[in-house]
Image (cartoon, rainbow, N blue to C red; front, side):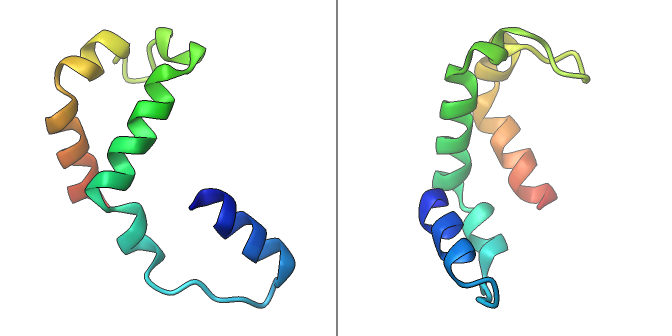
Length: 71
């Protein structure tokens, strides 16, 4: 979906995307983003909040729910 959105936005700079926040805040979308992010080599390094991959995966369901609520 991200590739489609990127392609559409470059093909037509006037295009409007309705309900984008609803898509981004979707539980499945957040879970897939977490999967991709946690699989990257950068996931081994803690973030500015000190949370590392082990801490995030140990409490992933709650972390994703918190992120979704914040959106």
